[in-house]
Amino acid sequence: MENTAPAITLYSKPACVQCTMTKKALDKAGLAYQEVDLTQNPAALEYVTEELGYSMAPVVVVDDHSHWAGFQPQKISDAAAAVGATA
Image (cartoon, rainbow, N blue to C red; front, side):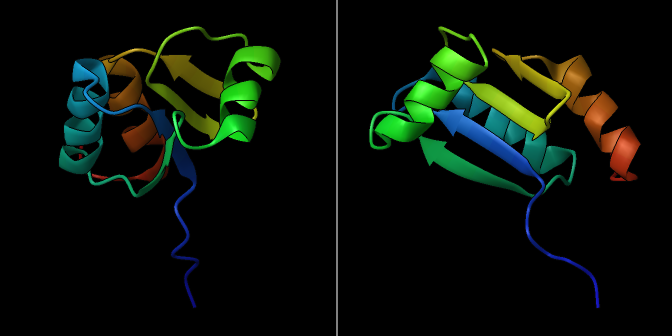
């Protein structure tokens, strides 16, 4: 049986244009993701700012070695290619 849990975590905040654009690009690429609202989750905010070092949303975490901040369509395409999704 296939693992259906999303490997990608999208840390976002409400009314964030780059967050919305990132969600649309992930959907278009066929990538499953779990969204975490940084305004509602203090532990997630601390992880993104203190551990990963980002100060803007969205933050996309593919794995421990692949993560970025902001709307970055090329990185979404690269992640889709790596998992064999349709980019």
